[in-house]
Length: 175
Image: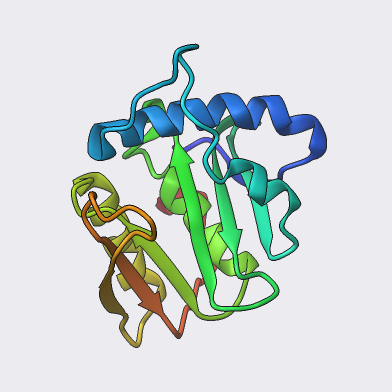
């Protein structure tokens, strides 16, 4: 049975924790986007500082059995469409149902139209998001390819567009 998965808002005291998880996230993405750490061995913070100050964004820690195992950032909370801006779970809990439960909680927390971008060259993410879209969007969804702004040297992202999201209550044991 899957241990309880919760999504909780990131608090100011969580800054160091989120920064450490961000390093793991950026490391995972480096496989697909070719980014390297800086001279100090750290990956750039990218958009992370923006999420802390942008009133149109919300950040969440993904916890399993009370322990942090990832994060999710949403943009578009004031000016829709909603967008999964960043989503990460540590490798130890991938393919266990943790990400699926966290993503369902995220979508149900913010009703409305959603956009979910991901990289095709990351096959795990592509399968994950497409499977979730079928689950939560009974009337169907659309896909678009969009260039990454300011980065013409990397492949375009795939965007799932979900207009009619329905996240029925689900027992964690069904994950």
